[in-house]
Length: 412
Ligand code: HEM
Image 1 (tube, protein in one colour):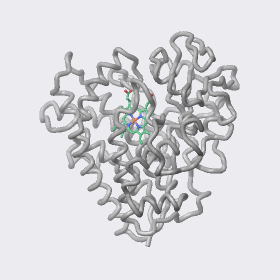
Image 2 (tube, protein in one colour):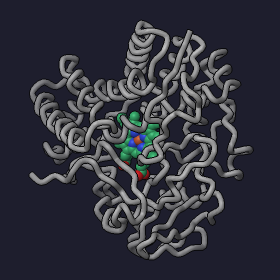
Image 3 (tube, protein in one colour):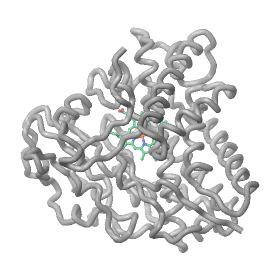
Image 4 (tube, rainbow, N blue to C red):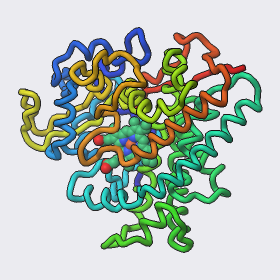
């Protein structure tokens, strides 16, 4: 069956990829824009960029703004050299049956409801125990290897990938293979061809997983979807797509929050000290990190299905809208001193997990991974510090998910 190349380069307004002096701040140029502004692109096309918090929330709450990826893509179909580009490494091959993140109601509603039923409190609690074990295992391995290491490959990438294995019910024997494919797919030092091959392997892996769970159901999400009360039953293709969407949405995001979150703590010693004193500061503190770092720095994106007014501006039918989550999450009306990282801030709703019908399905799981992962990292790498100057940490300005490509650290 036809697949498009898994390495997609999505055109984006170049303003959204810029960075200021501080690696954690949104591009300064966005702060000067109106809450809803039309960005001209060099070839005469345009996109609407929403930098206001209220306006961003309004767009995400309004299902007249479509998530349909095909519509979105045609609206954004510009040559990368014309408008700048960003790379989306693990893209799902273009088979649309179960890619609910790109669907609109009512099709989206049916799949979302089935998925929500699998993210039970009990399952999340069991996963939290595993998150702790996996974290400790990887941090101990870092320590066993010496006094220096790179947080990205040694901790931030494997933890969320193994948590998705737990969620989906991947057998222990198959995890090395799964880890290898997901590692290559996200590794930019590999060629496009190698990464494309790894993405295809992930897809084939999911196909085998679904077939296996049909014969050998266990206490996991995939078995739950197959043997649950879906009516009509989910098709093979839907199940494979759903599993792949969960990996695509849950791996790179969490990995980058773990690594960039570590970097942010190391650059804010007062905040790091708070975590050392009492890791419970992360109970609310992870939401402050999510707000402050807002790693989804391009999008969520939507397409207007009719003329829609947002914040006094009419967005014409067919136009693309990109929410600037980093800028919206720095709204001075919602957070005093929004540019400050303050783990003790009271929890206030932010847009880091989106809003509305597509609001992050894995947010409780992501919070557990951040809370437990960061607490264990601070506890188990004594006096953890950057091993290179902060200015030399390679930033992911070229990716759809912001973060760091690597984070060399040292400990005592
Ligand atoms: C949706 C962020 C972790 C699964 C979203 C959206 C955002 C987001 C902004 C909304 C997209 C849109 O409106 O178009 C994040 C961040 C994470 C994270 C920042 C980590 C810190 C996870 C994890 C999982 C997950 C761990 C699951 C294993 C999903 C799914 C959707 C989604 C399935 C689509 C929901 C739908 O379309 O109904 N996420 N996410 N995410 N996320 Fe997350």
